[in-house]
Length: 116
Image (cartoon, rainbow, N blue to C red; front, top):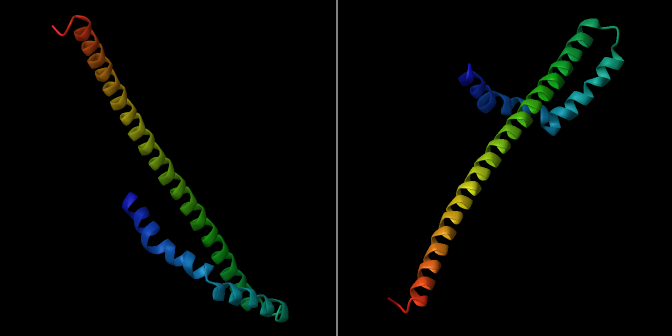
């Protein structure tokens, strides 16, 4: 099922959103309101136009919401990776500091003993 969702997210949904978010399609959709007002007695035409608008609106909003959620999940994953990397680097820095402290102490002791 995960591969199916991945297929939809990567291959199908971007085209649907691109189609419905196209300014020409938006303009045509707005122009479809004119026949709905002008030919209100033609029930079949009104139902078809209304169905088109409802499906387009619902589909675009749901796909956009899904993309936002996926983007948020990816950002959270990247933030966790960055946090893990920083914590690893901090641990390395602490270890190096400890080694340097030991080296300074060793050198200080050696100088106090007259280099022996």
